Length: 120
Image 1: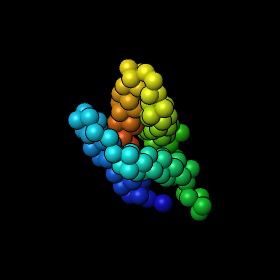
Image 2: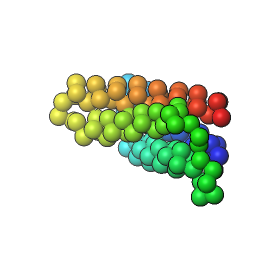
Image 3: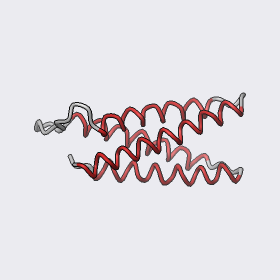
């Protein structure tokens, strides 16, 4: 398995997330795009984890601690904070803090993914 599908899916999720952030700042919300962002994010995380575990023919990554593993952990934290932010509608301040965490950790994970891909 190559890194191309992982990079395409997570790049699409990141670009869509940035567009959704722009819409959020304008006061708009499009549920269909939010759902697509969620599916792309979880799909990208799943394909990244599959890539880190290796392929059925035994070709696995050799690094014990790599940027890929750290990026997967950051994407998992980002997914969790985004999910909790969507549920935290009673406290707008808490939801905004969680949304800021979601964006910051997600972009850090994407930067580490790009560093890992450029090194392989």
